[in-house]
Length: 167
Image (cartoon, rainbow, N blue to C red; front, side, top):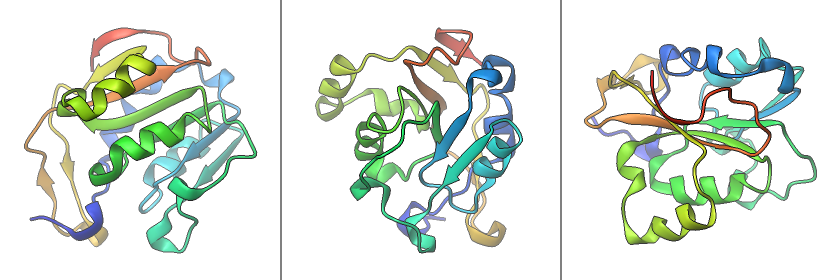
């Protein structure tokens, strides 16, 4: 079932698997720019001193037009796929370490080739199971039809394993 506005929420296991790969003492300020129902933001609050969560669909500011006045030690999110490239590019203005949950197919296309040339990935954490994303109130839960991974740019050296990692 296709939901409007890419309104799919991330299953808990998809971000919990990151726990052993992050030096959490280095994460003092984190941002989740497209938080949906704030699942990832809530989890990050158990790990980081301070977390900023934002969701433009819930009355928050539009991350893509937001001007940054603060550097975060970590940006971690599952962006709406229809605007994933824009979110990834804009994220570099907020943190040197950006971690985005995206389908592996995000690696392809000429349109994103320049992104990966100008910002080479430090790590790709491939999920070995396909996530079952769900819509608001648990509606529309369905297993993804492609493989997903955490695309990681780690300028702050927060992740303890680089390269391709299967998790």
